[in-house]
Structures are given as structure tokens and as C-alpha cells.
Length: 111
Image (cartoon, rainbow, N blue to C red; front, side, top):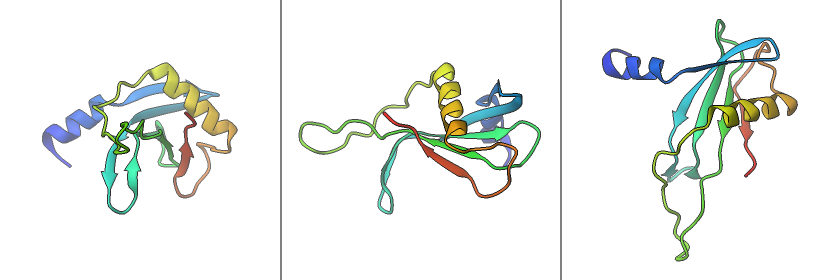
């Protein structure tokens, strides 16, 4: 990856220290509709700062449907860093260990 997209991706990283782990998080994908998976909400990727260990993917609910029953793809949602930190802690309580190895841990954030 080169140029603008790489610079933009690096500038969107946010650092946080939780339980002695230095982590950073960034937006992985916007709310969207796919034919395979249907409606997907905002997704945030969390990693250890100095390692490529097990990642965490925070998956937020898609949002509300219109009265007509059709879902509306929301504008780019605002992200509150304190809320993300709290959600990372909830994922750790649910079993995510940043120092472990394996495939990414998907955590569905309750509404």
C-alpha cells in the first residue's frame, strides 16, 4: 500500500493502554450492505502496538430501520474513544487475550 491511503490509515490509529497492553485501534469498515452478509455495522480493528498477535474486531450494530422497513445506510458514524476503550475491556472480559495467538476475535458490541 502506498501514498495517500497509507498515510490516511496511519493517521487514523488511536493508542490506548489497557491492563498493561499497549494497543492501537482504527476503523476497519464503515456501515454497509453486502449481498453475502447483509447489513453490517461499523467495525473497528484492535491490535497490540508492537506485535502481530491475535486481533480484535469490534462489530457494532447496523442501526435502525426506516418506518418503511428498509434499512438506511448511516453517514460516517462518530467514534468516541472512551466508548471504544470500554468496548475493548468488555471484549477482554468476554475472552479476548491480546497476547494469545490465533484467528481474529470477533466481538459483537451489544446495543
